[in-house]
Image (cartoon, helix red, strand yellow):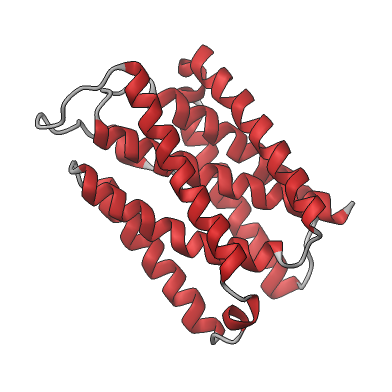
Length: 219
């Protein structure tokens, strides 16, 4: 889901950071989320996750993600936004754990490498062409919603999955990285906005990684 937090103004209580400090906070926040996911993959047995009732797992996943998203969407307090960020990171980490367990570690590292390169490239484009990415944000949201509906119909009703959908999702989240990074550089450089920007980028990058891994796994 796209993060609408950038539409609101930051709190006047938030002190403006320098460009370097602002980008550093974004980077450290992202690294924190990725480290949490890395730790979860290495320390939480996949069997224990698979033993959870599917409806309980799915309900807990959405409850945590939606609560976390609401917190960093609505709050202008950095510590509240960071709490919301972690409530998103943890359930995403459980999904990542389940997914990567099905693939060889070499393939996972290759997906990480490709995701990192693609992300850096899209962040560069987002810096150079912020207006273009801002203009396609609505189209990306509509495209993502349509893809989700089509994929749900294919999987749960038709029992099939077309590989082209994974490529479409990769393109959509590539666009989202450019959108969210471009916006991050256009809004006031406050601590809260840095955390909110990192949260949006985190969701883009993890979704991008999961789809790239799936594409590589088919090959």
